[in-house]
Length: 185
Image (cartoon, rainbow, N blue to C red; front, side, top):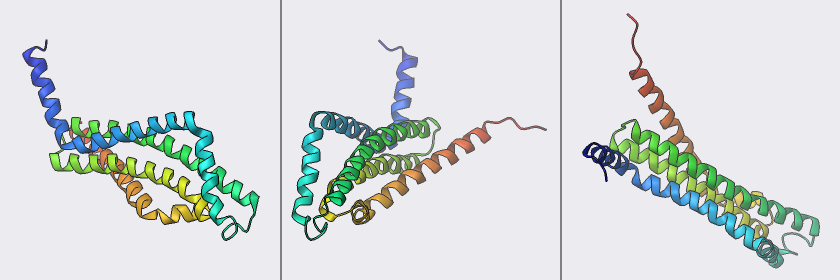
């Protein structure tokens, strides 16, 4: 049972987190996405690698000129991209969540904390999806470079939003620290 003081504190915390709710949900979805990828990879690695091989088959002659070494290299790098998606989701989702909570605790106005949280949560999720998608597309396109280029529309804004959100948190944090510092004089 909460005391009146605890109830007031938890109501205040909920109130300060409310403008950042969408970003927090996206950050949590990003973490969950990374965890689910780990489970799927653990249970279905051979199936996924088989799918990568199958997606290269229709373009074996036209794109790869029947060069097995190139096909294998693209498939291996595609698998690494999928692993990269898993790692990015875990790291970026957790980072986004922590930074969003920090912004809320620093008392930033609602619209600003909402915008920063959306950039962090959405950016982390978008960038993680980019790596997974690039991994799946690459064998059918003939190269990981072509896959990344075809998804530039997702990679650039999502990574940019995440970096800008992080820089915004740094600025807010430094300003908060400077405001709370005693002045000499």
